[in-house]
Amino acid sequence: MAVPITVVGSIAFDAVKTPFGERERMLGGAAVHFALAASFFEEVLVVGPVGEDFGEAELDVLRHRGVDVSDVERIVGGRTFFWRGEYGWDLNSRETLDTQLGVFEGFQPKLSERSRASDVLFLANIQPGLQQQVRRQVPDARFVALDSMNLWIDIAREELVGAIEGVDCLILNDAELRQLTGRPNLVSAAREILSWRGSPAVEDDGSSGGSANGNAALRGGPRVIVAKQGEYGAALVTAESFFALPAYPMEDVIDPTGAGDTFAGGFVGYIAAHPHDELSDDLLRRAMAHGTALASFNVEEFGTERVERLTGDEIAARVQALEEITRFSGASVVQLRR
Ligand code: AMP
Image (cartoon, rainbow, N blue to C red; front, side, top):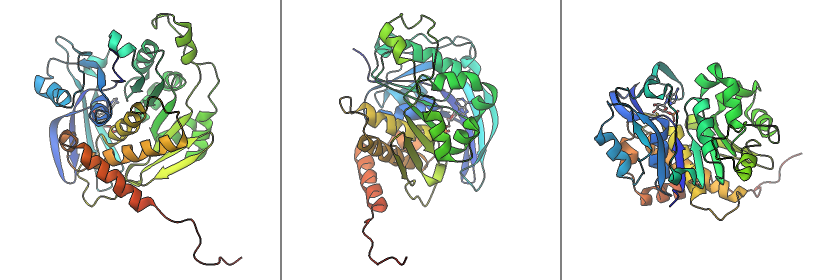
């Protein structure tokens, strides 16, 4: 049977230092953070390679949340993707000190039948060429979202634009949206990307199995743009609407690594859990709230530590708290002066 959500992206070991502590080698990677968060909504299958240094203990973290790891390929003699980053007092900006692609170099994804038939596909942060290869293998997905980062805008922009043209939803940091489009502000950057819709997109290399329906699905471009704004929250832009939510106010943020992917897991997971609903503004706003709630837990501890022991009840309570703090009445209580 098809799995509802498939994700491809980095599966990693991270070395992270923040003003509140450090970890020299912890489980990380965009696909891992995404999968743990999305697993609260639907079953998730992770596609990607790991090296011989990746143990059963790391896979068990995913298995414990019911994540299907059968498309995780262990490469003999290979080394798992490694990332080292450091945060200063401003946890919104971080410095990448080292990125080692390891087994992702030269990786050729071959998706199982189960993942090819997924309803929802998330192309988490990794080389855009790989994102495109996976996209072509899931041609009939109802909803496809993509995340990326400044590195790929710097070194593989053309491939990244091609990948973005094959998805329904782009989830990117606001600074990266500006970098990608050369537009000075978030709304105009999002509008620019929305205007790509309808332009010729990803060429089909035949690996999708040649389904005419599938080829059509690969043409177009995003109709939903989500701008991640770190501790300030996230904004959503479509052709018809704009919506924004602050991050849930936290007194103690310990490590923001993976917050973006955890947000994406909540956002995309919520959409996956509503397969018969159209992609209405209302649905997208509720998805934003769930992404925001999930991300707020992620930053409470290092890496995946907090989300590993999170419960559905805790998420529901935080969504409700978020609704409380963002609600206000539009009725003016005073007569405004002209
Ligand atoms: P986030 O904090 O949500 O932006 O994502 C952090 C995760 O992204 C870490 O767990 C890293 O392993 C992963 N990561 C960092 N750099 C890259 C990269 N160039 N490609 C893919 N994943 C990366």
